[in-house]
Image (cartoon, helix red, strand yellow):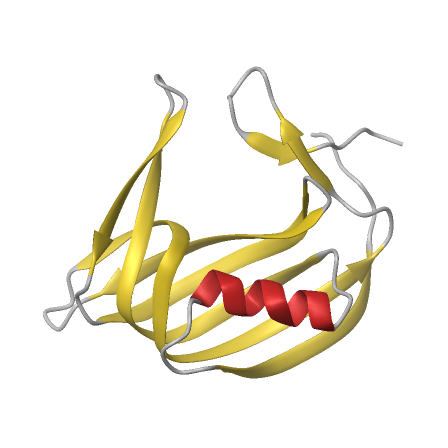
Length: 145
């Protein structure tokens, strides 16, 4: 395992604004509060969602959008930097009125109906995402101390 040691710095709890994009809302909050590295969990509901699945053979994300109203059964993600900009990386499991679930990588446009979030920020050397040749993904540039 490649790792960095980090320290817990601050914690925030709050509500995401109704009818706003999930990813953009979290990114704006992070910029306003000078958060460059963190972890979050989120519960609530969406009125539409754009989900992605990473095709490991073709090394591309395949996305789909649905305007179905869904419950956020679980959503977690991290905050770091990509191309010197705040980058929010989130995955979620969502359920419909029958309890059937779908999930994956969350992309914009994912519109919040209601959302409660807890963000934990960390101090230490900020994490930056860069291209990983082996996977084709933008992964953290981590090096063991």
